[in-house]
Image (cartoon, rainbow, N blue to C red; front, side):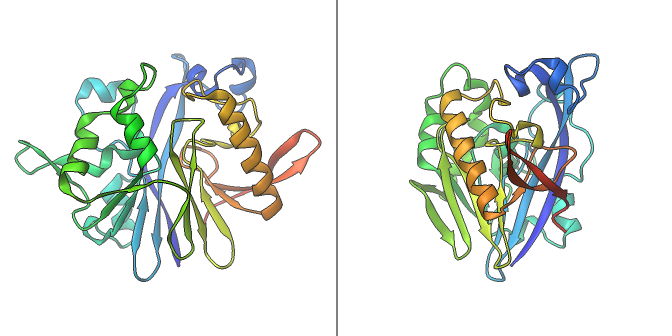
Length: 277
């Protein structure tokens, strides 16, 4: 089994939204903000080549939204989705499975694109099965007012209409060595992939813990729809990660790609930071 980081781009979000109740005087030491209070975060996907399947986890914003939309997220850096795959020796057609942790725009927008003459939409990965949790899909079809703007029909309906979309209803083993577990604090039915390489377990963090700055229990995002559930989920996961020496792969951390954690007097904290390769 081979694992490759796919650095699609970076984007900028409001520091207050990303760190919730944590005072700026604390979070800006770890994530400096610009004059508009924006912090730069990464958008990384993870490519898994099992020898039989080529699996991509999440796919970024894509490029089909208008200039006004992208003016709010300030994309910068990275290799682009197709460029990052090509850098690793893969094409869009090579992807057999597109695993979507959840359906917020920065995680699934790249899975659907315009056709050649921009008259309709088509799937970016024509040979892939698209996987999403059933609870997340149903939540996205009837979003609350907080999340409504994060679920875009042009990202979702082409997947359903293609016939290539399949649903995960509960914690499951997708393929040997790759399991998907559902969490509900950030959004209902977020799927977190656990990848057992035979040597270590790599966990794709998505928005369960978006960056190393979010490891302390109360350092959570204002975007989380169920904050108390998030606290419990994160505490349980971090204890498990420390006990089992998991490698945490961060989708959004600009400064740290992977870390391990350990238990301290202050709770679970970062132990070691490193690149996946």
